[in-house]
Image (cartoon, rainbow, N blue to C red; front, side, top):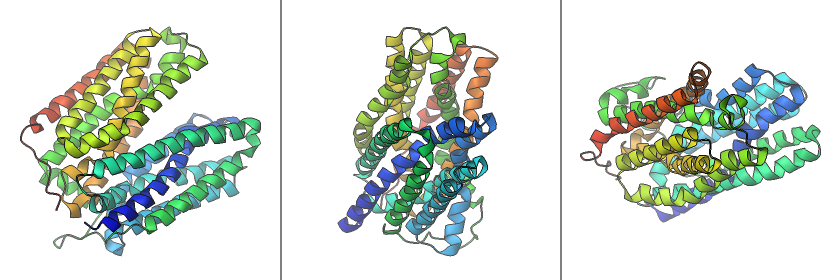
Length: 402
């Protein structure tokens, strides 16, 4: 692998990581904030904003065959997705005073970002050397997370002066997506290789679930784990602030537990997880990360002592730091180079399904049961996922990186 290709890719991804962190705040903070404060949007609008990215991830199955048929370079296909994201935010900015155009544009700008995930992982697999891939990617994740924190603080202060300034944020998000277009267009890559015996179709990538039993096992174990973790994650703030659960923490304590602590731990552990990914067996690392999630659920939802809940929150942050590395790169450990985008599109689409559904499961378990029931179910699902992965620990090796 040429060093110049790696350096060019890394430089472009570092700049794009800044923009990705900025756009992350549109999803995590400012989209719903603007909808509630400026339009008094109802539950369906907030739900649409939250689900837009998951829908985009599910739709990633369509992107890989489309890029194949058009014979586009992989990075150029990702750049086109970012271009559509930019257009979405431009629509939202131009029609900022209309709830319909705001929601339409923001959901479009956020939703399509999930479409490009398989393409991004594909060019990273080809352009980052195998013995450094985790560390290089962890640097990208670190910058993205830091960018999200700084952007939230700066734009939050900007809006704190006057919420009527919110259209400016939409122009900033559109500009960030535009920079991402340029970054991805500059990354070296080749077109995806088509299978000679089959014309690419939307569900063609699903064949790997049948052809590769190891891949299928990890996908279904991830679904089980995801339902457990995401169900619990959706209740983290509600558990602290809803009087039904009997906890009475002030706003600063809630912010410390649910926001600051997990974010700092996640950020601080990123390089550690990247180093482990490069040197360790993926399947063992998956079990370790799931184990950290399991103990995070137990500590967070079992006691009312804020100090114990803080331990659980820190464990959530630690597990998310490792989980993000594994989520984006694990297919590089099991798939051949030319099939990375196909494998990743299957993984991403299943992830979108669980992201969209799991929060409803968590709230359902609490509404018709209790926090204890949700804790037991979530912990059991994570434990089952670890048992599903366990047989792979000792006999499966990473694919050849050549």
